[in-house]
Image 1 (cartoon, rainbow, N blue to C red):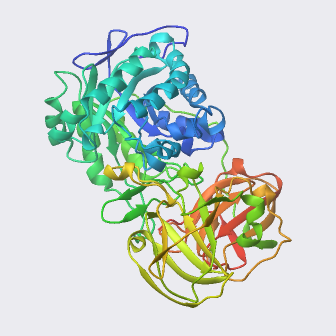
Image 2: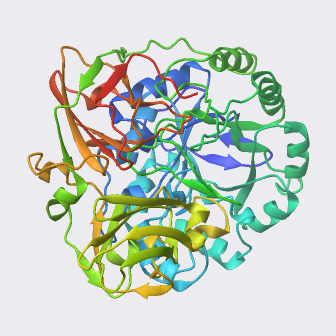
Image 3: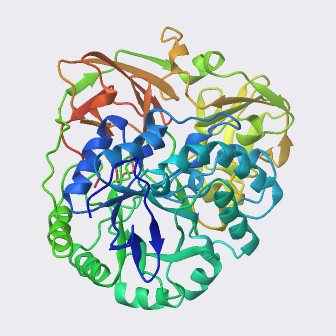
Length: 588
């Protein structure tokens, strides 16, 4: 069916299948998260999606991107969801929006804003405390989405009520409230829910008035048979056909899917129903926005969200693309699309450090300290992401024999003045640890804590305040009177590189290089320990020597023709003195 102009309002209905203006319509969709891709590349990624033979693009809408602080809303730049949807329409694509307050997506806190944790709130529940914040967010979001619907002349054909709720809880009143908020906000396109295809999850996540869909990556025939019990004769749809998986720090390698197996499952989906490929392109967890999982231990996701998707993180074609295009071509027209965005790759080579300054020497420029008897979490101090430093003078102790951090997350480096005493990560923070350090009155205890990314899935979402939210025990007693320095690192323009540097301590390293022509490049940090990188003021993400990710993707639009600045913040005292810009990725 030809795509109609924006002014023409259309009907999109759910009956035995989907119908567009009365004609049967098969959804062939792929996931692209606009917030993981620089806007200059949205057109390229959408054109490649259309060239695969897909007619629809699906995206989540992360609340924490659009309301980073309570009452402060952002809908421009990488957050311009309406611009992304309109661009898709310009290219003749339909859109599925998933605007529920929770998205999972291996995204920080599953898309929920961290400032919710400043209060005692049960997220994803019918508690008025939570719903009040959702309601106030939707009062801003939904007027932006409403005119994008196909019923208003736009191209949005479906919206999701909530995401995989049946795996999380069974609060029916919450699901009904979420549905009603969409309807009250003028959403008139059909609604969906999506859950893993177990009967218990599908029962828990469904809500009257929304089509039940499934999320899975294999065994299509068996999954669709289960799903049939919940669609009331309606269409069968895999809302997330997982074609790969995500990586976390320290897992030993890059996760990849089984192309032959997924090809069989894709064909089965096209024979039996409808599909959204997750992910068509994964993109990047820029900044501090990676999520984490927590089962027996914390597993923070890496900066790359390559996902072994149909396109690579940098938008390159893969063997999966060619195979899927062949399969889709048996069921739908596959257009020839001329790609309009010129993208090149550049290897700018090694760059030597130009200057450096220590964190301790920079504190008063980067943070205003807040004082309390016992340490307080990031969220209670009004901080969302990054690092936080706790300092307190030694008073009565003359020898430090043990330390314990109560209610601490996720990773803590402990210092006595400039001496690094120990590093504690995840479950190591649950117990007391021996020390052997002579101390003098007036020396400073320093505890630098990193937020590695909030849990985005499962029951621990309500219990993850970052930093220290309890107390610090030294030699068995509670050590009191702390200064707390929030370090979101969003103000590095205030750094003064003439203030000094202490070897082996957390520090900032500044680099400059000249680009005659900008191109996509990949930053390698061999010999560096752990930290994050800023390119021309933009936080491109985290690095960690334990891998599996070895290079950070730098899209060309973040660079300038001429002089470019890179600042590396490193916490382990491991710095090689140079960085290297390579022309290809290396995440294995």
